[in-house]
Length: 316
Image (cartoon, rainbow, N blue to C red; front, side, top):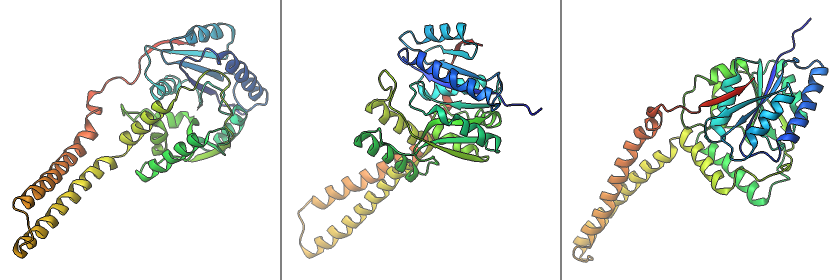
């Protein structure tokens, strides 16, 4: 008899008390259906990872764990942000299962396509990306900024899947390889494609949030975008270097221009010296900062070697 693979759902949570019961209910129904259909093992589980929530999130996870054998819980020692919390969940369960699907707790990710994720896994895919088919539920501003972010990341040279967030399946083998990436500045949407292996895509329609407020207001979205760019691309630093070179070249052109003007008698005493000095020294300073930053930007955060997460409790 063919062995069915064990699936774990890893769900980061931060102040999600309003949605947890409904999320647990819907996922329980879905997992039981997939088990009954013979798609996954009856040892499959859902794992809620608490990111140092300030509300009753962890208490609810504990209660759900006690009454539902499908529910596991992981508690972070403090708030570390979505990416670190997601990584904590993935790394904690990577040896417990055959495949993992990461998803948000707010029920915006369509759980009805989980079957498609698993089927592509059986077809040989080590990583399967959930990609939004459209952004009908987004405002014009959200759609414009989100799609602009993906295009900007591609322009920066970052390998990223367009319209993919963190709804993805990863095999145990892919997770073992992910564990070798030791970056402190995490941007999993850019790191996972670096792993390689055979990949697949499942398209889905993202729903409205079931309850509660979004954990990604504009300020956090901008911060997240900046983390993604600075952790995976050095183009901003190279832009500064290029700007420094450009300004220095302009200073040389101005020097030639004012020198010619001097011999033609079309100069104001002292003007050429001041302008050339400002542009020349400014350009050289930016050039120097860019060159130094090229090295410092690569090593600064990584040399600290601080833990990316600390697990306080794991409810198995």
